[in-house]
Image (cartoon, rainbow, N blue to C red; front, side, top):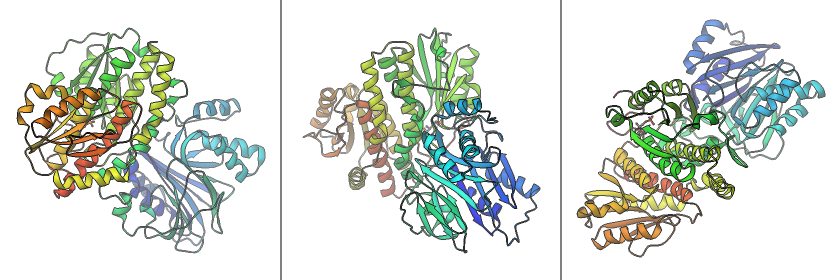
Amino acid sequence: MCGIVGYIGKKDTSKILLDGLKDLEYRGYDSAGIAILQNSKFDIFKAVGKIANLEEKINLQYCLPCSTKETISLGIGHTRWATHGKPTELNAHPHLGEYSYVVHNGIIENYKELKEELTFAGHKFVSQTDTEVIVHLFEYYNNKLNDPKASFAKTVERLEGAYSILLITKSEPETIYFMKHGSPLIVAKGKEEGEVLFASSDSPLIGLSDAVVYLEDGVMGIASTTAITFNQEVSWGTLPSSKQFAQKDGFRFFMEKEIYEQSDVVTDAMLGRLKDNGIDFDEIDPSIIDGINEIKICACGTSYHAGLTSSYLFERLAKVRTSVEIASEFRYKEPLLTPDTLFIVISQSGETADTLEALKMAKAAGLKSIAICNVDNSSMTRVADATILTRAGIEKGVASTKAFSTQTVVLWMLGLYFAKVRGVMESDKLASELLALRETPKALKVFDHIHEKTKRLSKRYLHGHGFFFIGRDVFFPLALEGALKLKEISYLHAEGYPAGEMKHGPIALADPELFTIALMPQNLLYDKIKSNVEELSARDSTICAISPLAFDLADDFIKTNSADHYMLEFFEMLVAIQLLSMEISVRLGNDVDMPRNLAKSVTVE
Ligand code: F6R
């Protein structure tokens, strides 16, 4: 995540940058900063936390010489969602070299190698960020070539990962260098002659520009008051008219936007961690698993479902006994905790009271701990021995979607990491798991025909006396997640159940008014789940099968793609059940993003 803005022109640069950052605050608010260049002098402001803190600082310290100016000034700004380095002022963007400043959204995967190389060449680093290497690399080349344009091109050639970048140098008071690769960036012509603007999404530009380019990956260029040049052909377009619409990127709800974002954010979650020959987590020391005989996972709600999914993966892949606990139950059951247990908490917010207290209990009992969190510097990250960030970006919809997919991908990677450290996985098997992981972003793409199908099904799946989501193995926690999504936004009763368990009681409910959503993967226990669904069909339950394989007895069918790994089927089905729940909620006229009685962060017991 993170948001970046840029401006060249005669207006009040600090105001334009601040207003733009406020529109981008949904992309992160760990820290913010701006750099303004005017009369060959840089003015820099940085603050930890929300944009309001930065604004206060600027209002206190900056007597803006340019508020009535006729001269050109330029500036770049950034609002941060921390990935490398804590949310401190030192780690806040813009980052300075000797004479240039950079803002960056994305992750530079090879920053460690570059940092080593540049440190050896005499460059001094002050932050823990990956971003700082960009500005030093630029200056390294520019000191040799004395050609900023060629140096910028050489710099981006060396960067691996995802990035959009704005870079300014003291010697060019009317120029911004830009590059987009993987993370979004828009360049816009302002309404006044010579004015140029940049932003990570279109809302900051609305009202200020009528001509924009939504940059494609690989596009770089130079903007100044006289021209904007690109390294390839681009097409100019217009902006949407409403900011609300722009913040949701044209989607009806944040939940919808977040479902569609999953493919991109899991890519971020894997960046720098998924390597050619294995998994690497900079954040944890391999010795964390030394002497560990058991893993205990603790979480609430959707995060609990990600934990339950991973318990199958940890046992299957890493061969470690794994148990999963609902945090509010765990706290009061007087659990037996031994130091040979690794304690893992999972939380989007990092603030959920029950999970946090469970973590404190485990720590007090001397257990080693890892927090899998989306929010850096949240309470859990400060208590746990190590933290792995899920990098989902801000999740605004109360019903969790992309938090779950990123948690599950991170946990899957962690299972493979432990398998390697413990030496329990053949290299062929590891290679095939890594191959599947690489396909995850594709599996999470939203296909039009699936979305359309869920819209159509939502007409029928409204009335009745309840829903059963059923699945086996990891598709059982997925069934739980499907039922939770439906309950929280549609207010219809739904249960997730292990398919094989239905005959031990719940099948008594079966009749045409009972809707069964059957998760039927091709690659895992297909025949078993098929028999379970047949049993329900024989009792007249209405069946919606989600599967790549057509099933004669199903009343309705959502056809997923054939994939050759069950976890890829898992992610495809996840998207289908998220969309189905959302479309049912829309059909019922409910508030999709803010369902009744719920809150995004549950900081009470
Ligand atoms: C469901 C949902 C909740 C959260 C739960 C835990 O869509 O969002 O069930 O998963 O409140 O929250 P975190 O993950 O922040 O600990």
